[in-house]
Image (cartoon, rainbow, N blue to C red):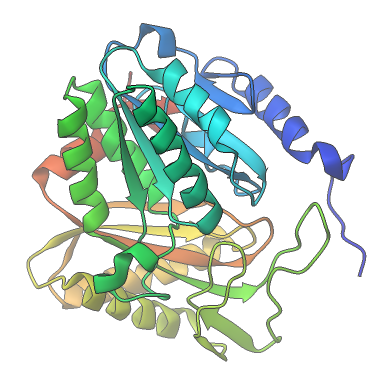
Length: 335
């Protein structure tokens, strides 16, 4: 079947995407060299700064969260592909305003290769950088082997926590400690009903039957071992909520953040129906939702499904989550 997408040349997808994104948000971001999206107020940043990286094709992530209170520079690779280490090193240098840089990397093979090479070069050049890896997909490795877990939508609230701590003038070590504590207490589980087509090649990322769904689907159509007959919204919510609670060892009386992240082709109607059941289940268990988000943060083109994210919260983390920020796709309060 022929791919149907509103694109021009497949070779220019990322460049044209970034040009349009920067033009649409020129009050907040600017397009720099080597596919960098840069916080327009970076030059005035007398604080720790935040750099991240990732392939295009997951909009609004990752560049949709560049701006005051979150990310300062995102380095964008081609569709579903990590950027190389040289532009990431250049971004770290550009971002450093004398207080150090927090470098946030999602746990995927290409991103980790780039991240590790970038850190090696940064250390050789004497840059003050700390790397944080988001690795919260519970479907492909147990918690004791968290280094094998994929990074999913958890990167977005991690940007928010890190950016808020940095905005308050915390040192690089303090920002890293707060961010790592949040990252250590988060978990995500994804479900997919239908795969997406790769906009550069037209290939199908995941092939699911009409009456099938897969719990544990990765960001790029990777299998999670949870293929099964289609379930209702309530049944799906219960499976996923219970799995996340178990992974995090959440107990009665605790407070959590809950995010339902649409994968690209799931309606808000569906997400709100699922969220309604999640809240009911958690209330029954005596677990309080103190922070939430329902919508699209990290997508995979037109993949149908969603990612359910849960994180253990406390007053300090909730303070950072609620702190002001101003980015193209996430805003809170007034900056």
